[in-house]
View 1: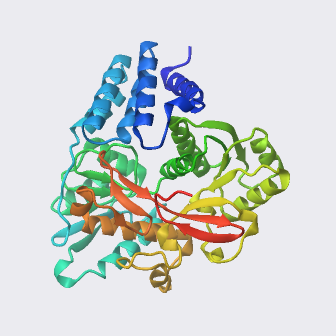
View 2: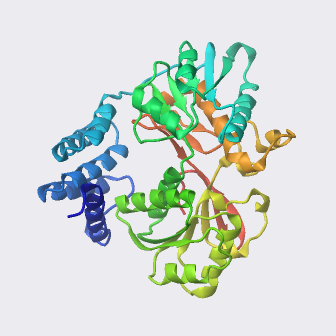
Length: 431
């Protein structure tokens, strides 16, 4: 018999595939229909003894609902996780139930402690984050400018102790360090610079640029655009697998079917076999995780090898700022979510532009997402009170909002290639 952690996703997939073709349910991305359909699925699984599968579906429902409805779904998830003996998941749900919204104040005085590594593998990324933070800080008026204090996060315990009196903590950056903060809690209100889970302890806001989260965003967009079957093309790398995981899991949870999952070698130069495998079974949409040159080769091969015209969604890694404004016939009918900050003319007036940071001799375009990340981290700290009350901020990485589980969610700007030309589509927009 399969272990539970492998069994219940399989059962959920079977139900998802069965329901995806049932028009009478009236599934939609955010409406009552999808809530009722998933709730019915969960109870059906529970009646068959698959309590883990039922708990998983109720947890998904809780993520997309608020107020009393969210609390009810969390309580049902907790009940079923307890019946499976899954103590770790039950503990996570208890934390979510206890994590009432924390309303803070905008940090305009006092001290913001920034926990970043000064050496090691994350040093270059940390330096770019710091430059992004300081670019926003420099714009603040003297009377509304908190003090910034940078603390080396190499010894996390010591760093947290040094930051104990701060009005706000930004950081840490690495996933292991963020995991310690999320697992153990922290006294000061904290915006972490990475995300390790979908639930935060009280007073902690998780903020990250996760490929898994972006994969989920892309799946939601494809579903909202009316697609129900998809194939996935991704590289045999850790980052490619994270994109694939995010897209696939979210696609299944919405009720979509995956017709093919095809990995290509990172060093591949030809994509004939890759595309043939992916296109063997027809799909409404194709998700491509790739860097700019490979994404274009894959799309060009798709246009050559088949007369079928599925809509293509690409990861943000496929975007090349240098090509913006140039016609790209090989990328026809491709949608890409991008960091707003990297699109010429799309930056909000309240934050520094790409050109402003680019003028610094030390600017590294390969670290663009980390500069943007730093900009948004500082923006969130300065507007912590507003965002905890439900305000959405137009940041460098996207439109930023706080969900009921203490996680900062990004809604990204979309670019669409049509007849070789680019058009911009604001976050949340449809075709």
